Image 1 (cartoon, rainbow, N blue to C red):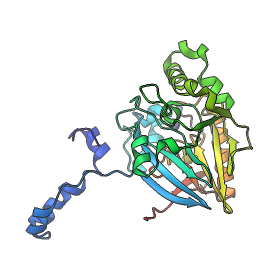
Image 2 (cartoon, protein in one colour):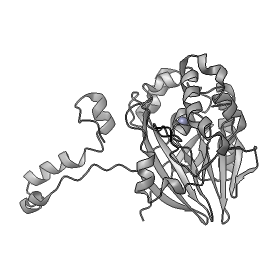
Image 3 (cartoon, rainbow, N blue to C red):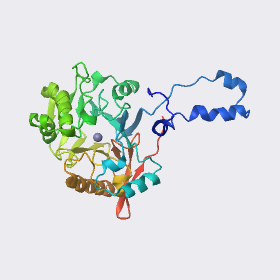
Image 4 (cartoon, rainbow, N blue to C red):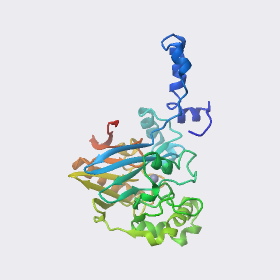
Length: 335
Ligand SMILES: [Zn+2]
């Protein structure tokens, strides 16, 4: 955590749990529960954050790598058609502040028999949604990977937090030996020169997508709905958030695993209210339909899943909860 300690409410909310260990030790020392010798030897540890998490999907090795947090401001602003009181109620129930609404970025690296596949590339160095993003490359290295050995980048869609990590600031590729796989619909929409004067976030996102995808155009490949992108990785078209948004079913050793991408951004709000419109959805009505359809598929097939924007590492299951749905996070296993 690079930012300075802050006593502001916002700073406390964003960093409170991470900084809890050191101050909490003090009363135990003064009460004699921690010997003075131990106190003398105590070295303040470097602040740690969860950065990568490894598990198995059948015979594949899967690693979730954090690109850090996105600050989306007030939750109420991100769901413009929702009743703010209802948003507040759910955030209260989840012990979350209404603002800032922080979303994680959980990138997945899948090691198959002969490929090293990265799903989504994070924000890159830009700080469009706060200073806590852009950690993917460091975490890839921390997890023991060399970015040059990534053979493929599979993109759920071409928004900033998913494809702006492809190129470095100096114009060189961060993953120089990787092919890039994306739906043609999303590639065409977000690299469209005609949208360079669109204004708003669309223009900003198009500028960034062009900067990251066009220099690698000769390595870009398009996939088809329902077909294998790569062996063991099937594309499932899930339009709405973007026109060509795609989720993926990973299959290995008799196990299936669903990468939902941005069909759902918030682990609580959009399971209780899958019909809510999210501010960055290209087609909110279609996004809501897609969301329910994907939830029903995951429920009926008991598919474990990863949510790109869920609390790290973002792995769990979806179950019904009355007329709505609920995310059930997987237990965190060490080692
Ligand atoms: Zn996203």
